[in-house]
Image 1: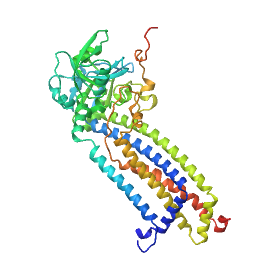
Image 2 (image 1 turned 135 degrees about the vertical axis):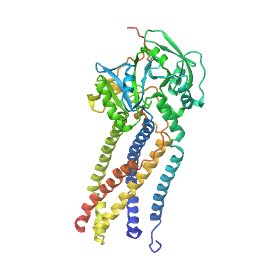
Image 3 (image 1 turned 180 degrees about the vertical axis):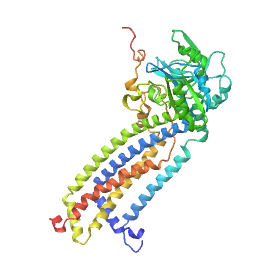
Image 4 (image 1 turned 120 degrees about the horizontal axis):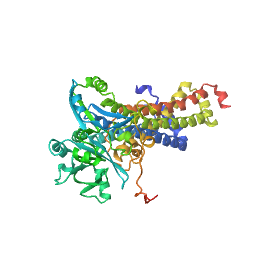
Length: 107
Length: 394
């Protein structure tokens, strides 16, 4: 490489690209070491699921389509799509709490 | 390989980028943001999917429900005896569970009845309860998820909770334990108690159950057994583990698909702008190409130089975008973006996304960004470079 006469820019660019890739790899290794599911916690999750028998993740408790997908209406399967089961905003209705909205139940 | 790379051209490309500092900086920033957004959404989806896939195997193979007037209905407990008689079935258990709507907080708890709460399940429960301790109680008792505990606390229920039964009377149940934080994604809204208590709270008769779960030893037989059950009980709805897996795949594909569609639209808008700007190459740029050709550059030299230019910008944007996405999703736990996947619930969890190194996502985003950007810079230059030098300069 010495036989060419470059300015500092090319080595600098190569250095920047190499360090970016190195940062990415280092970040990946760090996350892999600290943020992956440990076997113990994975076993805990499995045990919990086998106790409850309910598969679904508690990330959407009002949406029956995500929380407990095994519990929904038969006919809603084919309403939108052959594989779609019940989903919250369109097929789910409940009376919201009047207390939390600061209103009374009086008609 | 190294000898094939013309470092003089790279040098020239760097100078060309630096000559238009602001434009290059702006393009790199926008492309970085696009890459960051798409990669983040894919990372979140992958993590949640992984979490689900790792637990889905612990589920019963088949769930049998009764359907009446097109709706789910309580099933007869006796049916489990008949199902047990089918060859290949190793276990059939009638489950009792349901949603309890807690009006004061406006949230649904999932209440699950567990067989012989006090005996065989106690060991398993101890493993998944915080600090491994189950408290004692003289009355009816339950173990709750951390979200449920928090909601109850806010509503002044610290040691116990009063369930309102369908006949209007109250059922007092003591809280003896909280599920471990590790299981939060599964247990946040969950209440586990004995089957008798659940029957009392939901007023379900002894002879009825919510559904029946069937365990099958050989996974290849699941489909056959499912169809046998369907033949014996035509009013039932059979859900296999595979059905659940597929429907989850659909939900996540749908949610990340929306983002992919948005990304593609914004990406193409971005490239149309670049292509448009570049194809009406400014007079200065055209003159530059003309001069380069006049002093002896071949068309492929010009294209190579443009390739380096495009590659430097898009590759830096790609790498920075991915680095930011990794940090945003796995270190900061994706604030705001996570909410897209958590739905409308008021009983939200603060869950940890487990790290998954997904090469497929990285390749997908790479091929969606880098080559397309390079193409958008090369094509207009190629059009200009193929013209005669004097024509271009004039």
